[in-house]
Length: 171
Ligand SMILES: [Fe+2]
Ligand SMILES: [Fe+2]
Image 1 (cartoon, helix red, strand yellow):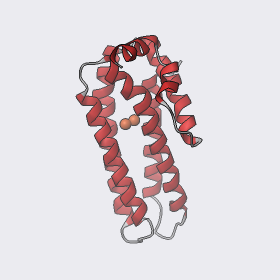
Image 2 (spheres, rainbow, N blue to C red):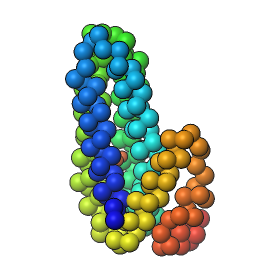
Image 3 (cartoon, protein in one colour):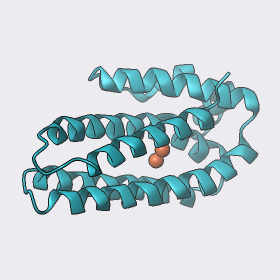
Image 4 (cartoon, rainbow, N blue to C red):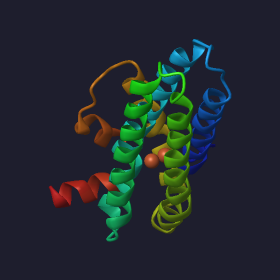
């Protein structure tokens, strides 16, 4: 069974492939507008589901919250790079530079997430919890993609027992 790390890693690779595809397009290729929409949807849903499930869990169970807040800050950096790219997508001489910039911002974040946050998380979560989190992540991401707003109670209902207990203790 896939755990949360498998799923997040797989999605990181998928979005990287989409961005590479975008960078490889020619100026005259109007498909880049569709592709950037797809990248935006992917990044947005991944980020929301990741914060709701994975980041919140680490925040609740672990004392070292700096890694989580640093990750959230980098999600905003990605948003900004993406926004700039969307604004420049029709500027023939510029869009590719902003696509390359987005790739580097995403890559930097993914490296830190996988190397630092994942390493920390492995020491905190049990294997069962990692599988449960994968399941919650997939469900929440699907709901985000369908355009639903997600209430935190809904996420909490599905979370591993230990996370729910910790939540109830601290809220
Ligand atoms: Fe991620
Ligand atoms: Fe992330």
